[in-house]
Image (tube, rainbow, N blue to C red; front, side, top):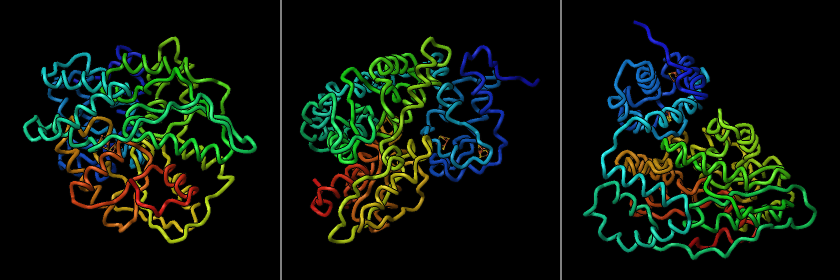
Length: 427
Ligand code: SF4
Ligand code: SF4
């Protein structure tokens, strides 16, 4: 007997889920760009297969437990959306499906504990800094731990950068003010690479952008949202709704994952009293590279003394989820002396994907090594990208291959070009 997805029972997300399922024509164009299909070669680990699996669960055709291994393998990279000629909004299906599944599934105690640890630590910079320090001490024990815990430790840098000084609430524009924005400072990034925010602030100020940094802001909620912890994600979103001012031209993010998370506030808060405010904040949120490229550099960096080859790595949540590919490349090309080189398989995820490299270390490891090899094969002097998770993953896999290739955020490359320090060794 033919079933239908119970749209009404699924709440405000029901119709977008049904639309995503209904618009898939099973053509398979998305398969080659799907990192799990590329790695595992299974139809059920492809976007097309997962859409069928999710539809079957929602229609009552198969049990949730049968479906979850394939759903859990999905990185949520949205490469399938970029590839799909029929415009299937896969993100509108997988994210609410994970929330649906989370309410109904049973997890193993170790898996549950690990998930809680991540959700209670990563979104809080103080806790994460402490956990990262403890993790650094425990690194020599990694070989004796379960693979997912070992993967967590492997990803940590040997030493954490020094804690950045407290950021001011307002960074004025240098010279004439061309725009006023607010900045999300992020969570893990503050611990692993606080220099990204500082570099972004310097570049923005130099280009006439005044930046407000609201003290009351918190985690964007993307980590919770994409792991099905929907109430926790809503809590983060509401805090940011209160924190970010309206009188700005845009709310900027410097991490692709945070940007795409905030741009989903409309979907996250659908059917809630703050739905409209969530959608408005989502619409004002932009990646820093997209904002700056649209505004235009009022003061391009001085030419480099020697040519430099830069490989640009597309972070999935920038390239696929936010459709931002041209803008960071344009900013890098504005540095006279930089040659942009493109790695093979740009569309394939590096395996970072939030906490995926901790939850699925084998697949993530394979993807990380593949990405590191593709980037090294370009012969570039450095890699530029727009997401702290990708930076950590690529650095770890370049290191594991016994090679050296600095990885910087696009705004750090620009900042160094302004300071004329791009050719100096990168710590
Ligand atoms: S490319 Fe789009 S329509 Fe074709 S199978 Fe993939 S998701 Fe479905
Ligand atoms: S989101 Fe990424 S991993 Fe998941 S089905 Fe789409 S392409 Fe594959």
